[in-house]
Length: 213
Length: 213
DNA sequence: ATATGTTTTAAACGATCGTTTGAAACTGGA
DNA sequence: TCCAGTTTCAAACGATCGTTTAAAACATAT
Picture 1 (cartoon, each protein chain N blue to C red):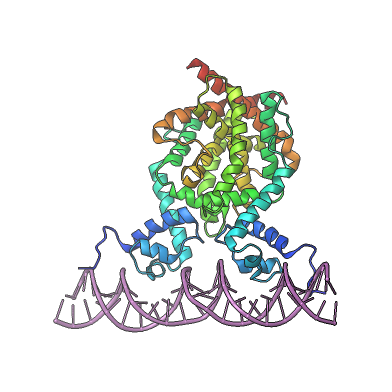
Picture 2 (cartoon, rainbow over the protein chains, first blue to last red):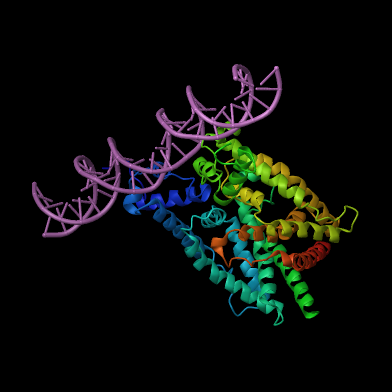
C-alpha cells in the first residue's frame, strides 16, 4: 500500500491543479513547487509526465478547453437551419453560460495569455477561437444585409461578444468587486434576452445606417 | 562629467521604463534587473528611489494614469448640460480614444492586474474607476427612464463600455491578431458613431421592453 | 519468485530573483 | 577648497526558480 492513496493518477491531478493555478495567477506567477505541493506530488513529477513547465501549461489549457466545449456547445443548442436571430441568441446564450459556468478556467487562462502573452498558447487558442468567430460573423452578415462591409460586421461582432467576455473578466476577479454586475445562473435566460434584444436593435440600426449610405 | 548623460533623472527613467514593462509583461514577469538595465540605471536604484519593487509598481501605474487622464478627459469634451444622448457619445468617444491612444499603458497595467491580481493596485484602481462608472450610469438611468432597475442600468452599461474595453484588450496584443478589428485614429469619429448608434438603439429597445413590463 | 518496465522520490544543480551593504562619485553651498 | 548631502555603483546576500539525476518504490507478466 502507498503512503497516500488518491482517486486519480498523478498526471491527472497535476493537470487539474495546474490549470486552476495558471488560471488564477498566470504562467509566470505559478511555480512548479506550488503545483506539485498542492497536487501532493513530487517536484520532479512535472518534468517526468510533461517534460517541462511549458508543456504542462499547454496541456492544462487543452484540458480545460476540451472540458467546457463538450459541456457547453458554442451554438447554444440552436440548429443551423434556424433563423439568424435565433442563432444569434444561441451564441449569446452559450457565451453567457460559459461566463457564468463554475470556474471558467479555460477562459481565465486565455485572458492571462492575452494580457500577458507567453507565446506558448497563442497558436492553439487562435485555432480554437477562429471558427467560433467565423460562425458569429456569418450570422451577423446575414442580419446586416448584403451592403455591410467587413468593418461593419467586425464592429457589430465586437458589440455582440464583448459584453459577456467582459462579464467573464469580472466574474472571477473577486478582488475587483463592483466593476460589473454579478450574475448568477438563475438569470441566464433573462440576461440572454436582454443582450439579444439590445444586440438585435443595435444591428437593425446599423443596417438602416448602411442603407441610407 | 558623468559617463552617460541622460535628458531625464534616474527616477523618472525608471518610472518610464517600469510602466511600459509592467504593462507588457505584468508584475511577476518583469525583473528589477530588466528595468534597471533598460533604464541604464544600477540595480539598486529601484530600492533607493522607491523602496521596493512593489512601490515602484504602484508609482508606475499612478504615473501612467495621471498622464492619460489629463490628456483625454473621460467626458469626451461634452458639457454636463448637454442632452444625455450627446453625453453618452462623449463617453464612448473618450473610451475609444483611450483605446486607440498610443501605448495605453495605464489600461494595460490595469488589465494585467485584473487578470492576475497582485492586490497592490486594486484599491487605487477602484477609487479611480468608480466615479467614471457612476457618471455613465447616471446617463443611462436618464436614457432608460424611471422604470429601469439597477440591473437594467448595469446590463446596459456593460453593453456600452465593453466594446471599447475589449478593443483595448486587443490593441496591444499583437501576438493575437485577428481576434478584433484593428482601428486606427483616423476612424475615431466613424467608429464612435457606429458604437453610439448601436448603443442608443439597444437602449431604446430595452426601455420599450421595460415599458411593456 | 524473479525480471522488466513504470512511477515516485529526495537531493542537488546552476541560474536568477529582490534586496542589502558600504564605498565611490557626484552635487551645490560655505 | 572643503564639506555635508545626495545619488550611483559593484558586489554579495539568502531565497527560490526550473530542471536533472540516480536510486527507491511500485506494478505486472512470465
